Image (cartoon, rainbow, N blue to C red; front, side):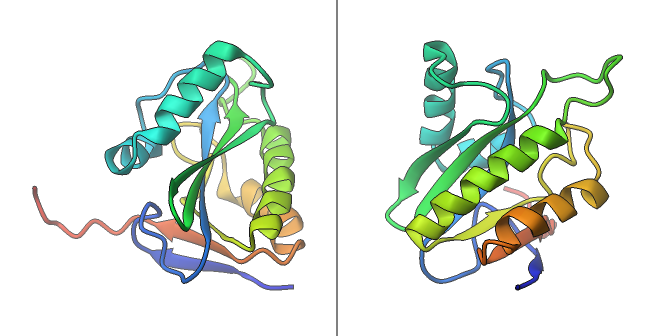
Length: 162
């Protein structure tokens, strides 16, 4: 079994050869507009458009579901529905660890079928309010256990302005 590879950089610019899947957590209410999704949208319009269309159609759009969107010949974006709503409430933060696990199990199968590595920020730990100490073991027992190479990116701000 391999290890998670931790890198400094931008998860929307995967640092590997071959086929790559960029994974990120989405909410279950069809909202797209804050957090890592903004970096995804800045690079490609397809993942947002497909997510919104999927939500509108409702076909399988639910916690624990995934959607793969091809954005370049060798790159896909995986929209993982693992966040209940967008705000913390009486049930705690929006992240749903069981949904993360379900999503990553499915992603492991898809990544293996494609022969792709998986690239992600520390999913579920930003606006979703999750803890990496809980998500990392889920990554280990789903993706790593399935022999899928995993790269986790901590964004390194270069200080450049546009």
